[in-house]
Length: 557
Ligand SMILES: [Zn+2]
Image (tube, rainbow, N blue to C red):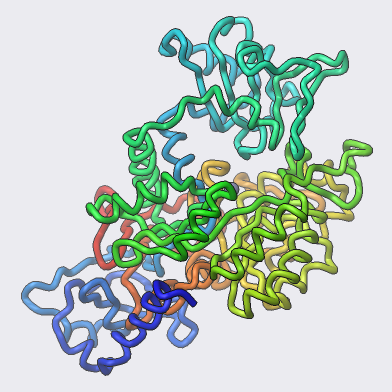
């Protein structure tokens, strides 16, 4: 284990243990919180009436009377006014830069048709200066009357000279208009790079749709981010997160420049959110060289790399053993070969760097489990490598997660979006191992919960609801949704608290409301343990507290 990490974990353990707990609790608290149900996610004491905090740490969890003794003249009293308190909610899979960019660029979320996307793009055109490109993201064709992907011809009529790139919500495909295709020298004869696809219509003409690695063909059109713009996106992204009630995120595919920007912001007190980052493959050598790193008393920690096995189910990029049920002969894309991934994993194992690999299809998941099994013999039993999404797994592969100590990092909202078309893509039989978070939990695997924002909205209430209800936002489900994969409320709470903490090696410090841990806390105006399912979706964050400081307070809370 590296020096940085041993300081992080052992230093803290000593600081806490060297003082008896009674002494910790004898000083007046900085903050005492009461006035609503408190759910700790700590099996030793699942419920409490009061929490006291001093110097950013929890010093008391118990009944109101006990907390009374800790109130001094300077103690701040927080009344939950009936809201319920939880360990700080953590989103275990977020693209923080994308969450900020979504606010700062054309946001196409919630478009109900290709025609609506076109109208929104057209409305934006007058603000695009000559020579600039227009970048939008967030469209998803599920439920569109056109029953097809977006295509260049939807926007070509009003964008003769302006390149337009419109990314699908899952980030695994984009549509380039004809001006963008021309600028990037892509025509009907262009060969797609490995792990990518350039879609054509039945006449062999480009549709504009570039899938997975083919998106790199137009990357050069996007102007490089300035440092100021990068920080602006991160700042806006962090504000969005704390408003939702997230105290922490695991930032997936973090560009190295973003890691440095976040570290800067932590030093100057501009990082209200706790961020654990997994850097992109191209930046992996930089993290291997630096080793695990942490700034601002664990506010910004970077200890992981993000790899990709395959694409996404919606765009038929997820790698399957058998062809897609609705596309004969198509089995999806492996984005990197085993030969490319294995040496990277070996290096990570040597350098104590956690590996987080995107895998959606059953073939993608199996390939990564095989590669992990080989690499983990060198990384040791506590490497805690993760598979991101772990969406569709052969039943025979489900127990391998627990056996290998591989964490399944899953996004419940993906299931309730995808299950509308997953039966078409996979057929009912193959849905047995799809979004199987209960089966994974039952076999002893740690399942960490997240949203994949901006692919999904990033609202913890939607994620919690999806995990326990396994119905869409209107309360509907269909054949193959497998309600038996729903989690109990207590299990779902752990997805976003205790399990999220374990998935970033921070269970000694985070994840439960327990004396000695950091005071990262979230209050919602809904009791997630008892509210009727539909009411969960009406919940809103009331208070977001990081290291004992209120970083978001809802109006009136
Ligand atoms: Zn993602």
